Length: 216
Ligand code: HEC
Image (cartoon, rainbow, N blue to C red; front, top):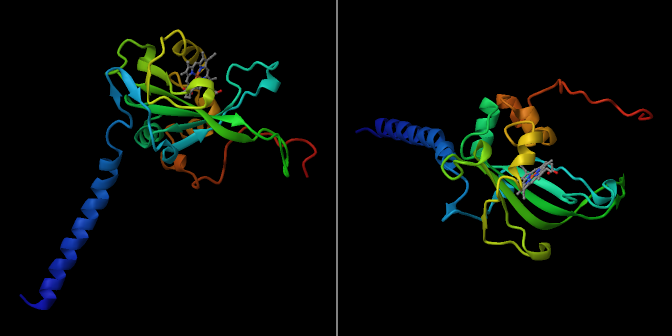
């Protein structure tokens, strides 16, 4: 074989391998569930800060007569495979997991003004939609908490709460299939939005925002 021919073959075979890898890799990485349930207990998920961040609701005590049900900030994440499904179909796939990381309310002042700023990590909760693991839960959603005593530790595993503790309120008031997407702009704007869900593709934001009076 001449050198030229050999180089040509080598070029094509490497290009094909690289292409094949690019085509198969994301599917392989994203396939399957992002959680493990063993003997009915959810193992505490790790690595979720590298999933897709969807929003941060906060209902502070001082806006709720000093006794908010959930006074801290909630940073919410969805696993990448379920995000992909959501932005393509506008539905939560079987196997969706959302993580709610609890963060204390920290300082109420910054050089930018007064407000609510995040403090420290103080707990972790999760919700999972799974026919296999929660066939009898409403919507197949089960709810878990890993928050330890006095919010100082996290447990290694968690059992699902009874439906009346968590599912009922989620079912009654959440915008999409038990999930409070109305408070997660990444999910509400990204619902079935395809590539627009990934950011940076829109010029017209198509929102209902009203600029506050007095702003120059
Ligand atoms: C009184 C209503 C209510 C009850 C009861 C309730 N939640 Fe929620 N939950 C909410 C609201 C509202 C949000 C979104 C806003 C926020 O985080 O404050 C939310 C968000 C969540 C999220 C983020 C994903 C999502 O579905 O939006 C998780 C995880 C979660 N709750 C877990 C739990 C667990 C675990 C329990 C039971 C121990 C529980 N919740 C009970 C109202 C409730």
